Length: 249
Image 1: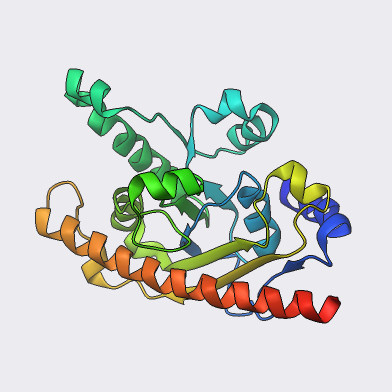
Image 2: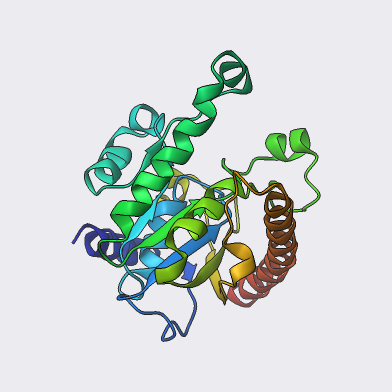
């Protein structure tokens, strides 16, 4: 009900500005999925919900616990809906208390145990934070439009849920202008695009990330390649947005 109410409200406001996949008939609300996506704005959560409501099983985002205070109403709704909230620890904190390193991973495992009970789409923003030019420069990211991806979270989910998963949904998001919830709702962003592709879950993607060093290197390399493809796709999306804008003007 929460998803459909959000969709109805945003449809009235944004339907002429958003561009979703035309065909989503290859998706099923009774299947389990892992979704990976780039992260541009706090609005991404609502956008993904709107793009896929009625096509996939109920989404569960892995979210930072700090959002309960920095994004109170939206985050509290997510908390009530059973979204898993993770505590993020700095390297300095982990050096002082090495056990903290395993805290989030244990929370992910417990969340996966809950996901097994009903069809669920587990969603991870694998960049770990929203894209900004400052973060992009600080990371010296090799991608034009993306931050560097982190494999740990999605690797653990794949390992825990592999027997029941249908596929990986690789989702790409792009806004024609820098976006926030306020800017989107006030028409400061004139085009919003969502694309996806299904990726097969093969056995080589489902090993134990924390005990297999070779696998850690392998899945990070695989994710880097996925991100390189996504970077090229966003170039194509930007060109499509320019063409639409030229037609409208």
